[in-house]
Amino acid sequence: MSTIFYSTFITGFEKVIEEALLLRLKKVIVQTVGDGFIVYRTDSSMDDIKRLKFLNNSFVFLKKMEGTSGKTINDLLLEVIKDKAMVRDIHTAFKGKRHTIRIRASVENQFVGVDKALQKKVEQVLIGQGNLTVDRSLADLELWVSMRKEGFTLFGVRFTKRANYEKTLAKGELYPELTYLLCLLSDPKKEDVFLDPFCGSGAIALQRASSFPCKQVLAGDVDASLVNALRKRIERSRNKITVGRWDARKLATFDTASVDAVVTDPPWGNYGTTDIDLDALYHDMLIEFSRVLKPYGTLVVLTAQYELFESKLADVEESLVLIAQYHTLVSGRKAGVFVVKRAP
Ligand SMILES: C[S@@+](CC[C@H](N)C(=O)[O-])C[C@H]1O[C@@H](n2cnc3c(N)ncnc32)[C@H](O)[C@@H]1O
Image 1 (cartoon, rainbow, N blue to C red):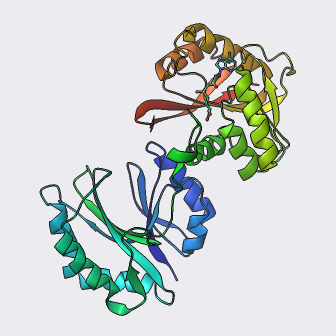
Image 2 (image 1 turned 60 degrees about the vertical axis):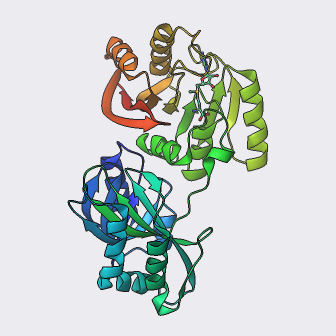
Image 3 (image 1 turned 90 degrees about the vertical axis):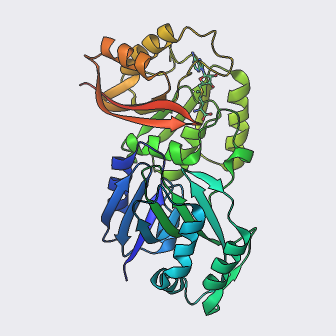
């Protein structure tokens, strides 16, 4: 049986997400793709969707209501009470099992409070059929009413649970959905020798080793304390990653044309690294990446210094060719993701 879902994802990756969904889910028909969200019909189950590591949140789609910019969240919650078909769809999607549910409302991606009396009325409608009970703190399902900046509102029931990364990530560590997408953009293959030469916490390398088959994953950093911390983390996770301490501008332990993919997040010039001469660093790293990459090898770079990166890439255009570029946000900061191929 096919169901309509919607999922949210990191802004800027619309095309990548659409392609990835078409490849991984059964009989996908994409209905709408917008800034950071996609609505699609599929024969795949909620469990299949839960396994997709590149999505943020996933929902059973209930309704997209146009022209809601003048409305209040209370007006939109009243819609849930009025729209019998919407409530019926919720009960159909989650019939058979007992679930807890709560209501969440957002305006332009920020959660907002809701009128208590109205909240209670909506809850009464939701629990009408018996298998749903309300839990305002730790529900496994959430009815989301999301007013978007584009002037429409999405109604859906969230069935995924995103870990609270803010508490577990190391300083500057990229979150898993982003590291997964960066690895995906490198077109991962099982015979790959994979390198992150500015690995920091090692988040990209750990994602590559745990989510995609490969021959070898190598990660390193100039900072000895980060290298040691990553070695300890790898012992605990049992991922096969070779960790080195090096200067990414001179990867002396690497032979020429020995690496299939470099996926990396070089310094952006914040968090106390302002003493780095980024201009020289970006120039030197590109020369070195072009040396260690095999012909047709792939380079994926995430950086907020996208203008600097573009200008330095232009200096080596004979060996490194830009294939695709994405504009995204990382912790609220504008960043670019560049996919580059090593010329033969
Ligand atoms: C933006 S951070 C990488 C963060 C990483 N992606 C993560 O998720 O934790 C850049 C890293 O480059 C390292 N670095 C700076 N200059 C370097 C150099 N010349 N060679 C190697 N690593 C360097 C810094 O120590 C820092 O850990």
